Length: 517
Image (cartoon, helix red, strand yellow):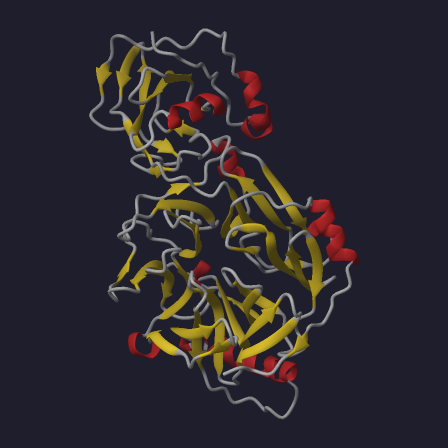
């Protein structure tokens, strides 16, 4: 007799409240639901939410809990693999025990598991075609961080930086702006997946860049050189260096355009911060070029970034901040003219010097904008976002993920990943076999986190949504998840310790070194 586990049905109304107590509802001694012996056959797989049909998953991912989107009076789901072990679940909302799920995945590495759904209507059972899910032998880095934010960005509102363990459903905030009035936080990033070498920037009250370096938290004031803070950072893979763009960011809101919100930079420069020397090294500083979104190659000898050209007509006799106000008003009317090219610079780790920028994708030649580049850990592939214009594709319905093969020069859209809505910021896990990205697919209103398996030849599998304890939790969440970043372990500090450091630590001003060319 195959081993079976019983899950009681759970109502959508109480799903969010009961998520943490799910284990208490699962009884190893409870009688499992009876699997129908007589049934009719449906020629298709059932519709489920989230859509996990034909996806590829890591062997250390949390259970793929889902809801059956078919009409019926009773439901039974059997989850099985190549061995004798199976999981039997009763009810429309399927909640899978974590221990049984982990055992099932470990027994089926590189194989397929199936979800077979039985539905009873008017006393007669039907069996749908099994849903197949491939269990990859490639593990994913077990921790994820993202910014949880209201989707409109009109005001700061509630913002939290959260950490999620991908192997279960444990989520904890490590920064919460509810403790501060009028503060905003930029997204979190770390060096090569190391949670003990990481940073994020706080704007508004208690402003500063919060840097975590080998067990110590400090706050930086990086505005001394450019007049603006550390906005989009990128850690060098091995050296104590952070490349970052210093941006004066502005927003405009559309009442008729489908792309509701536009974000643009009225100034931006490219800098290098030396963590150990506490020094800023200017890299690219220009008036009519806008440099942003730096990204290192995995060997640390190449730096990629996006650069736009736009000549504006403001009076430049005042300070940079004064000029930024006048420039922003003009750029608001000309935002569709702003297109970013993708460039690459060679970096010498001995001298900390850069070569002249080399254009890889020319915005002027293609009438498109190329932003948010990230290089695969093997150095061969670069994934970026292509949009019609601008630097903020998260609200651009036309924005897609594209793949540039740095070895062959082949450049193509990731059709197996893209949707009809906006695809945007993304990152790799340490193995290069998993790509995590933000997407507005579904309702088009909220950015959600998706995963795809990426093989050595640049082929992706059908994306799957970050699993939740219940589909009701996913549907009731009215916040977006921005800039997913994978890590090897949990952040060492509690949210309270981080918030206290933000509030009480005085920001230090790094020295400024001469540019090295």
